[in-house]
Length: 325
Picture 1: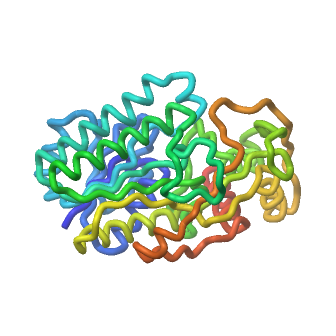
Picture 2: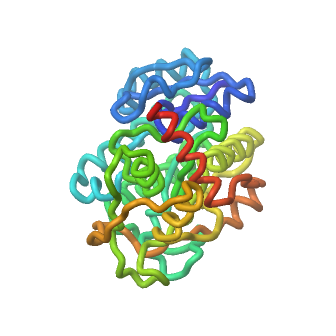
């Protein structure tokens, strides 16, 4: 059995490849390196530079590497960019995913794991939000991902393959062994930016919105360590290979932290505070997103190991320091 990891030169994808290789699985990475970095692809994985929208290439890769499962990370993920450039997001996240799904159908690849997002919920009325909550995305990023979920559901019914869509909450941290982490030069993730300020790569950070209806006025998010997220993919892959049914699952710990609470955690790890200033809200940001994660724990047996904000921040900071050296 062999796994194709699209976007495997990126942040989460590179961690996924490390985890698959640790089990001795054969892994092929397909990445166009538009945001991923070749150096993040672990030794032992077969790397192909290319685009998921190139169906002739994808189908050749599926055939030549005897792929039995696809884990699909490739796509665009920055919410404000999706508001400014919606057509680009629908192209990268929806149109090209459709092409990838069709290639899998043509080559008989019967297992597909998709990196979706909590953005499909928009601004949920109830928190923690469960998988059966209304799907009302408020930005093109969330809409583009939801469209792919819908395509997977329809294609699976029509063509007899099984899929898992994992709705990520806020992924953060780095490999505890220091082998990979977030390396994008245009990162917009809070913990990544805060660690860049802590290591002198940025002068300060902005807090986008201090007037939200939350206890301290800043956005609240459910931060999940990247290694725990990867483990959810392993659980999903095992489930599908064992003949399990298709499904959609939240990936989060079930509790949230505000922007100010994250900065306080970094201050604890650093033993000092970093400079931060209030700024206007960003378009497309809901006030609060916290996962209801009972379903993934009960159905896939997911057992997170790193549910600790200080640990998440510490691994991210260690990675950022290593990048600087």
